[in-house]
Image 1: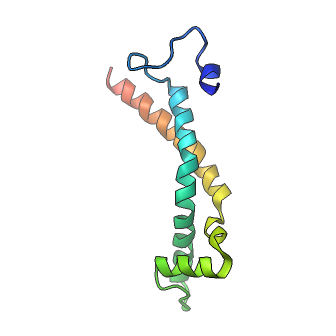
Image 2: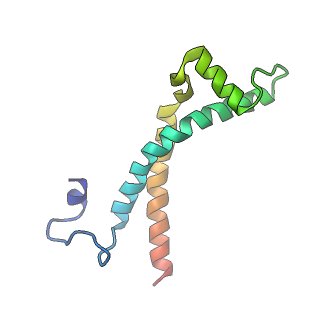
Image 3: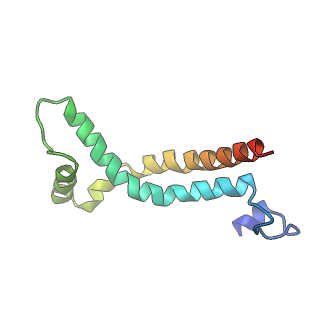
Length: 111
């Protein structure tokens, strides 16, 4: 349905002869932000905790694996996903712009 709203009904369905529009590619980029966020958020959380620890004289974690294990042990798997909303708020529009810009520039350079 979303593609139908972007591409009028009288246009042909995308195929190898009809590349996706920049808007359609931007939407694909935005949608790719969802799984990226699900995989990236725990890694970002661990990275941030280790970065904060680096400036402290007290070391709570002995590396990323230990940090993840301690987070899960202390507060469950959901603790790895603290910050999901803000990570999604960065990834979804960022990837939409990146996909659209990349394709636009690629098409311009190939002309």
